[in-house]
Image (tube, rainbow, N blue to C red):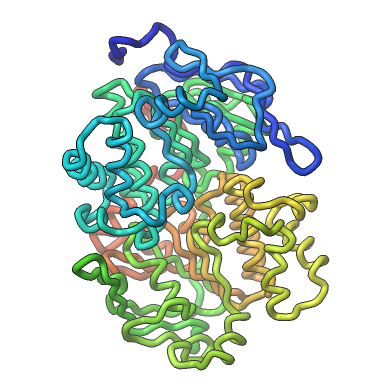
Length: 547
């Protein structure tokens, strides 16, 4: 039972009623929502799930008036606390955003001001709504950064967004959303960039808000394991329509629609696959790093990002690098590709010492290794269409037959052929990530560094991409350095796993051994933070729904 605020009205806190929304795309229109109706009560968590492009984020943006110029509501409406929300009344919307409705956007790379320190951006929410003076806002900002799991909040508060990892930036956005104590939090993929332990901390924090203040949460997620564990009700969207909704226990244990059944079957956490069979190690690895060290300056001090890291990767093998955001995974990968120089240590690729190779030879070698970044939007030129983005590496290296190759790559990553003329802003988060993967595959490299490559994708598309990576690896003997915080995905794709913490590798082993017999306490902590494979727990009585 929850307590209503003194000025609240009876009925649901949020009501979306028969909402239709269309986007102007080129000379035509694309219908994003087709009669969507959703209600969220005070103190309730409602999970909105569905594939990328199903309309989940469009619902979120419509509620707070952030649809953009190309979108229009063709019919239906939105009510908050019994009052109609006018999408054209910007003055009222500004009073609503932040103070009464907190919003955690999907893409942290685009949502933080690059020229303001992190602490100032958290404090700004309090200052704008006149909930604290400057000194009080700065103090509360430190408390909020600590609450969402950022280490050394006093150091992080002085940093700029580009000095943080993707997961750390996501936590800053969550702190901003929580700052003013809103009645409703709209969380658009709030844990997609977070490791399992921090995701649990953040979701626990939201649960505390619900219990203490009756805060409601509209949780938009492609992670059905998160929905199963956290939501009171689930609403399933398919191509802009609600196809199924109800209590979480009922929908996930006994889904009535084939679409929902497919989503559940594709979830790596709820339907885990067998471990890969162990393979013999090669005498000469494709990639080898030895004794890597890297420190970054942060304010008056410094942070050790990589501390004596060593590992090797064979052809045709997938090595997963896992650990908390900020543990040094992405920095290690950038050093391995010579995108960042190490303070000391060596990187060897197919017998070539990358730490000493000269520019011309380095450019030739770079055709043989490619990277898929964690944040697809910031790595895609917003002025280019999809065809130009995918063809960029082909042009750079003078590869012919670009039109045919682009069409082949679009098919491989499950995107329609007519997407070639779309811009990144016209794609969903998952669609943008698939474009980034297609571009990385264009030159048929020997090594792919995959930095959270499926974190923005729904379960069914995750399965397609992981199957694609498996097929390409078998056919071309590709090596994958797979960076991820999602241990369910790691279990599915990896031959071996290296666990990083505070810049050091604390444990390495075959995936099966590490998952079934972890030796390091931190590894055991990571595994304990994810839902048990193959189980779905009834939030009402704690029973295992899979039995």
